[in-house]
Length: 284
Image (cartoon, rainbow, N blue to C red; front, side, top):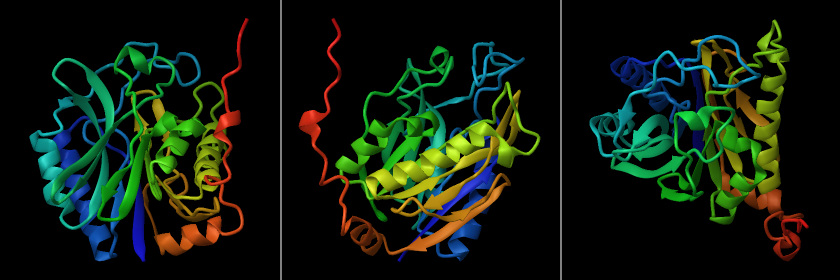
């Protein structure tokens, strides 16, 4: 059995405070036998703090501040590796290659950084502050073949499918997914963007018949209010554990190989594909 945990928590600009909170969360999870723990997008320096009210979910306004940039080989991820120990963590950071900023997810164990995913799909205006990633790749980790996505990536079936075709049995999608900014519901559970977040999680797990681990920020940052809803989803699209719209950690244990074999026994979606028919339409 593999025990998965998805975190719903608020992280801001104070990196030392964030690392201390991550250490607390990991310590608690270790006591529960967690093998893989997914923390939210931007948990190492906070997301974009947006001022004012623009279009629904847009970042067209100038942010009050930008997340601190970090190197994959830098002290912050070395500290994350120390915290991880025998656990595998997925953490969000603003990565820089020296000249360009990326919204990234790092897969880290006690041995160091296993792999990095740079967010490919950028919601309204985010491209003003980050360059877009260009690849989807699964990584061999202590918990098996693992893929990582970030937030809006989950809205694109091709993203999760690319990871599944690369052998990912588990996908961790880390997010800073906000509530609607033009038609916000009084109860976050009723917010339309909460519903979208949840639907995408179940759909991506079901269509690829994989285990899906979804983390998210909670609370507020700048003018954004996040929907939480961290969860573990089985390969049938069924939610095994969730935080709801509150903070906390969703935990579930699954026999991944048995779960995938069971889900794929009658209809194997990846095996039944007909890629020769999937062509972009020709335009005159």
